[in-house]
Image (cartoon, rainbow, N blue to C red; front, side):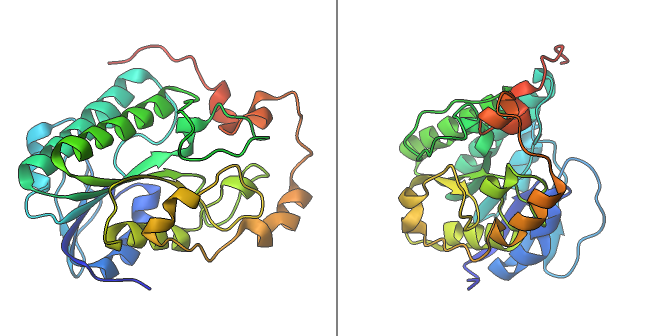
Length: 271
């Protein structure tokens, strides 16, 4: 069930893949959905506002946060790559976002973290939110920073955050790894809705996954938000096995939960 609990909801990264998938869905969660990205992505539709902002521009982010009740933060770089752009978008950018929330009085944020915060745990392990971060690259490091920063802003300023460690959110699993990490778009919306509407969110780390039989993540610590996934990668399992080769157990991408991210780079510095 979708609950309209907010007057104005900000979604950053509106032009990205998840932003596009959630744009229509999140309008049911608010009276006005404010959409932001750093470049033009078309006109506003009914019950929408568009405010462009580069996350590295503190003044622009502050203006974008004006009058916002809650935030769904998809903005930033979502793949492994050189540190310079990650620094600007994912580290400076998330700092600017939380500073803007503090100044504007916004008290709840759904932060799109990533499974790559824990990508160097093995696929033979099942981990909880209490396991220490083990990032599989610079992108994972930036998301681990965001999780720590959001905890500081909760402890110091009372800004509640759900750090959603998104697995693999696509229309369907692309390979055998995604049978464990898959998160349907509808379940992602259910999870965001739960995080926006639970009476007490606090600072919560939640694994963004559907109800998959094969999983590396124990989400029991997230029950207080009321997330109940309704989709599962299991229905795709036979087709995925038929079109993909048996995994090579000596391949680090098969050994570790981060998949191919554990083999990406190194990258030259670009500022």
